[in-house]
Image (cartoon, rainbow, N blue to C red; front, side):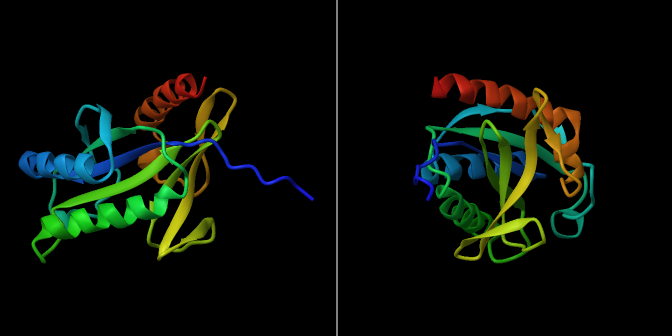
Length: 173
């Protein structure tokens, strides 16, 4: 029989895809109010790996990543995704989304994203939320898997997440 151990808390982050800078500011304020302090925001990046959101949000979309503090239990993934979905709905005004917010967390071993969509590699967490194993840490870096979204498999995001992993590791020490 194994001994039950509660895993160490994790570092939450969110990807925010948007078109309008003003809407981004409102979303960031809502995230800080409902999830926690933002430790870091990345520079704006073009969101051009897919046109998945263009029908809903338009073209020329951008993305930033935000890193939250403090560390939180992994189970908070469910509440965090439900919160970000609520923020998206509030900002849509009942119409098409104007912003997309996808939360996830960083561990020393992997990067997990929250999603409402089931798939073969996703684990159901509860309340309609699944955990998506997006990257694994192998040979000194986060490494994509066959199902990893192309943007998360790219060097720009992996570099950011590796740096944040280093920060997380120092916080655990």
